[in-house]
Image 1 (cartoon, protein in one colour):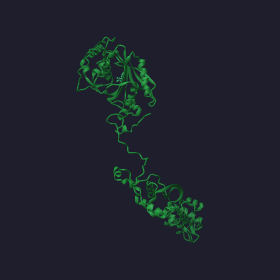
Image 2 (tube, rainbow, N blue to C red):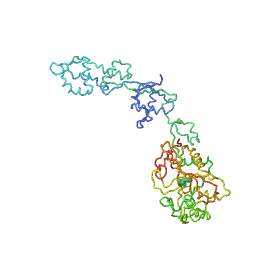
Image 3 (tube, protein in one colour):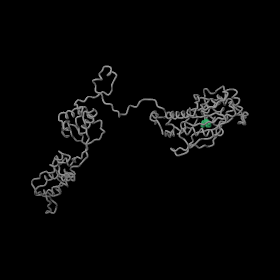
Length: 522
Ligand code: PHE
């Protein structure tokens, strides 16, 4: 067979230590060898290239990166290999023959034999070599002196063992050696059978002895000067991983925000303008019928501004109605909180503590438009609270809020809307618990069973805005406003499996986290 090279080598698997990667020189020599000899055996090649078998495997793998230069077939074979003792036997003679060199015709005491350097040099093969010499009838045991001694029975000791080992070295498949002999050599631990990988290398359709490194890129210059025509190009490796593209990525919070926004838009809600982080106490609290002594209005819970410290103007008539409602119910079938409302409290600027401040502004604006038109509003933005920071609380977070203003809405409308909203998020099993907000009555906390966490978790807060909040704004008496709110962080943490909020947002966030976050969580 022309150009066929069969050779064997221990299989090293496909991973190749870079340090042993053969250079181009070895590859060229190998190819020239195939070119010249057509066919050769393994040892001849290894000898010819004067390099370790691993280097030859490396050369083959390198050549294979050039298309069709060589064909390589991998064949697994069971081959006989020499143990250390086997190699010694091949080179220095079998253990039994070497043993004979210290056994004279007149005999040697066992103790003297064991003390001899030759015997010691045989190592593990020493003791079995006595048995072998006995079996060959080369020696006999003599106990006439009382102690054990060995006497020599023959003059010539032809080394049959060495002969068969030499034969096995020539043909490691063992085919030209008698099975019984092989069994015996194996039992004597001179040889062992190993599974080895053989590579059959043949010339490929594009065989060459001069490998040229192909161009990796087709450049604009090559196109311009026409040099691409005479160049060899490397084949595309379509299985290679691409270089990661440097790009912007949506943070999980932004993805979740977008999901909520889509749901609101599908449900026909309009987004409220939420760009005002700094708000007056008036819009954040007073407009929401939150009394001026309410603990939330303490610096422990709210960040107050130092500059600008106050806001000066609120719609004058509205401010008057808010004041009256706080003080005595303002004539809206309420007795209010029965205290003196101070304008100075309402003027204090703060970082808004909830997006309901935005809803209050929007509802007031709505009330000024006559005639009243029903609306559905939503907002998603940042709020601030002077919280004790821990694994699930930060001083700033994001709120989602939905508001519907229409005639004669009922608690059933609120519950139905919440079902509709949360069903779109894949949350079905809602539970409601009575709650308290200064601005809603009734108020309900919303819970749901979370299969992943295997517990019932709070997912939001809701309620029907009190007349004490809506009537001063000027909304018609039969207009009811239902609303609900939830944080963005909590569902994001549950959805993306964050247990510490600081891994999600803030200075300790790993900058690559957003890039490596899953595109989709099902
Ligand atoms: N503003 C409430 C909060 O901060 C949420 C809420 C919004 C409650 C609307 C009822 C109605 O938690």
